[in-house]
Amino acid sequence: MARDMSDIDILKMELEQLKKEVSTPREPVSKTSKDTMEWCEAASGTDLLITGVPDDKNPYKPEKGGCIIT
Amino acid sequence: MACQGLASGETLKSLKAESETLRKKLEEERKKLHDVELEKVAEKAEALGELNMKTRRTLKGHGNKVLCMDWCKDKRRIVSSSQDGKVIVWDAFTTNKEHAVTMPTTWVMACAYAPSGCAIACGGLDNKCSVYPLSLDKDENLAAKKKSVAMHTNYLSGCTFTNSDMQILTSSGDGTSALWDVESGQLLQSFHGHSADVLTLDLAPSETGNTFVSGGSDKKANVWDLRSGQNVQSFDTHDSDINCVKYYPSGDAFASASDDSTCRLFDLRADREVSIYSKDSIIFGAASVDFSLSGRLLFAGYNDYTINVWDVLKGTRVAILFGHENRVSSLRVSPDGTAFCSGSWDNTLRVRHEREG
Image (cartoon, rainbow over all chains, first blue to last red; front, side):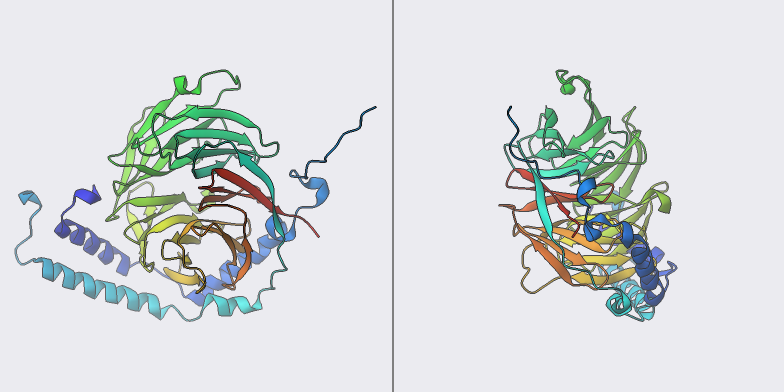
């Protein structure tokens, strides 16, 4: 486990990992940010934490106090 | 141990130098593609209206700090775990406690609801992850049917079921994450790469494939391939422990919360950090984050007892929520995005949402 590894082993592990990562395919931020924003805007209509929950569909309606005693 | 020695020509120094060179090259490659800031692109986005989130339910019943919570897919049940070893299943609509289990350990740092809603998983200082099938019979002793699934050599920091009740992914203070078969308890895959405790993990949304992200005390966030066990991407821009990681709903990015008092957004396709959510006035560590359904809002719970709500695209804070009387340790948005729940060291959980108008 990582805690039991010597400094050398940790360095070797990190080195192997860096070698792999240098050749990872990447895309420019201008493209990925635009995609992220478009995905977000497309979904925002159904995001109830932004639009709010209408009272008739509100499962957390504040409990009505009181009751009628006849 | 002599067997893990150095090859001829290698010294600690040469390894460090090679590492430095590669790190610089990685930085250059990432920089080439950093042609614009997310905030600039987001200038075109509509501004958010004012948020008016209120606490609708306060779940009281834990006798000690709430360390973790998770929603059931039915969008109304919540499982929470505490420092005193108690794990409680609540109905968030009525605040009724439906089940309670006392674990044979304190500091139950991780808990999760199974996708079917028929079981929960939890663990902590016992170094294990145990699964409890939930019975409809309230009087049945849940502990009797308990199944020990995962075994680590240090504390369990996080757990989550994969797409079914059959497999569990765990993270541990022993520096590893692991995938287990629930029925047999067999280890299916283990993930090595962090150089210190793994504190958090999150599974990618099912449509985007078989990966998960983990964060650790080594300040790194790593993305892993579930099948091969390979670490496919790594991010190390945080200045302190990463306490929580969460995927963006589209699966193309993830957010992190750290003891360095910032939350950050990492874009997986651009392979870099693209946003920092921070303020000079926020000096306490962030413990937990989650996105709203569209990914526009990022909810973050902090050690200064507050919850800050961030506009993910524009990078600004849109609300600050008070109410808890101690650290906010855990925070999750409900599966249908109608509400979010926060658990705190003040022994309570709060369910909040936004009302229309």
